[in-house]
Length: 475
Image (cartoon, rainbow, N blue to C red; front, side, top):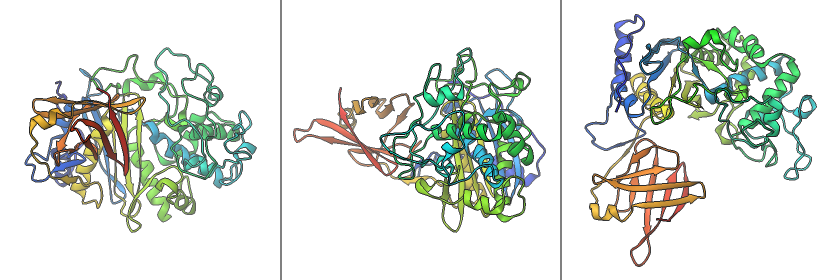
């Protein structure tokens, strides 16, 4: 296994802040930990190696200001160190930043939150649907993922691939690599994450502003907030590429051809740094209090942070408690993964960006360490107790279990340890909490095995996110 190169020393911090930085890097914890595990704390560089993540960049917000920002590892294997200025793709964190621009246009009177967006769209319109006859989609529904529109996310376009227009993407026409964006449910009837909805929003902003989307975002959000190392330009301008991290796959190999291009800019097209995203989070925190309203008024910011269906506001998921809520978002582009979290009242938060598939798991481990060091009330690991199970019993669980036609879990026994590998995911170790029920550490998921009356293991149940999925044993 490769090891990350020496962590780059950056910045001059007070001894107190440096101590906190060191503490964050010294004790990362998985989502689930074993009770009384003497090895529960793991070093940042060890976890980077475990996830094959070459580079990480972190910005921590404390009491409404960026207390520190620092890079760890390298921009590319054999390359220079990650610094706070290194550019990463933000993935879906592009959405809440773009949502701020849409809400700014609402306050300018150029858009309405609760009117039919088809009345403002000119280049393309949401087609009528037999699923929801006479349906009217609003900007509020687009921003809150309640519009009933299809297309979860976008894979981007590899170097050299033809790039579709936005209308081609919306209609699923070649060279677009995703399905058309269409109504599949009555608007407002349910919450379902839709990058397609944000692509409709992007077209809406283009039709209303008559400006290129990157310029609109620069003028309305990025420049006013001071996000000087951020752009929605796709592809990344040549003059900025030397300062960008190289994306990597989960197996540690670089993404072929380098970063993908995302014409779905509102949904996935932002290039930025943790420092700039921290500035975005601080702007929301201050705007909420009326201390800084460079983009949105305090009243509009409050609307943005009202949790509706799916605990989602207008661009941002809302978590925590009513007394101490936080807003957050994750982001995944090809070879880049990131996490943003910020508390509304305390002025604390963090942004973590990585340049590898699987980096979001690492980022959440870093987030738990930050939460511990800074005394946050959330993001603590779940504690479970493991038991010993006879290897002969473990061997009866091996096989392939099909949960859906495209999603299976393969169970193997390796060196006396039960291992699980889901379709297109990493292999992870299972820890027994009973003879037939097992948990994982990297995510909060449990697998429970069931046998027929004759004693043959027939299926498993995946318990995750308050849902149960049955998988039939096929091999």
